[in-house]
Length: 256
Image (tube, rainbow, N blue to C red; front, side, top):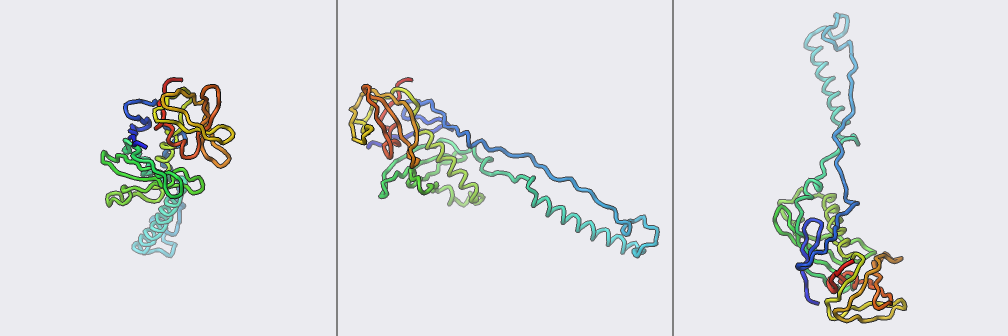
C-alpha cells in the first residue's frame, strides 16, 4: 500500500491537501490545575517560655528562656512543613500540562501489520519546535494497552519526564490518533483500487475504485473492536479489524 503522510496541526489532521475538518480534541483530556491552598495554623501560648515571665518559672535565665523559645518554634515549623508537604490540598505543578502546548505537528508516517497481525503505527511530532519520532506497537491490541516508545524519552534534556508525565503523553497521543481514525457520517469516494468490506454474513465483498459509498455509523463490538457500517447500492456492509484503520487512506470524504 502506498504510504500517505498525515499532517497534524494541534487537533486537526490533514491528509495531503484535503482538509478533513475533524476536530480530535479530547473532552476527557480537560485536566486543570487547582489553586494552591493550605490549612491555617495557630500557635498556643506557653507561659513558661514567655519573655515576659514574671520570674516564677524555671526559665529565669534570659539565654535559657530564648533557647527554649527557639527550640520550640523550630519544632513547630518542622511540623508545619511536614503537614503542608503531606496535605492533599496542596497541588504540585503538572509538568505535562505545562508542556502540552509545545507538542505540535503530529504525523502518521507508517502503518504496518506486525507478526501478531496487529498494527504498528509510526509517528513523528514536534516538541519545542524540534522533531522527535515514536511508535505504538500493536496499536489496536485491545487486550494489552499499547504505550508510546519515542526518542523523546531517552533525550538527556528530558530527564524531568517521570512515569506520570510519560503515561499522560502516551495516552494523549493515542486518543488523538484513535479519534482521527473514526470517520464522520457521509459520502466517500473510493480512491484505492478497491475497498474490501464484509456483508452481515461475514462474506468478503469488493467495491471498486471511484465508487461512492455512504458511512452510516461507527461503533465497537463486544470485544471492543471498532467497526464502520456503510451503505453501497442499497446494501449494508461493515469494515472492521485492521481495515478500519486504513479506511481514510482508501477513501476521500465528499460531503454529508
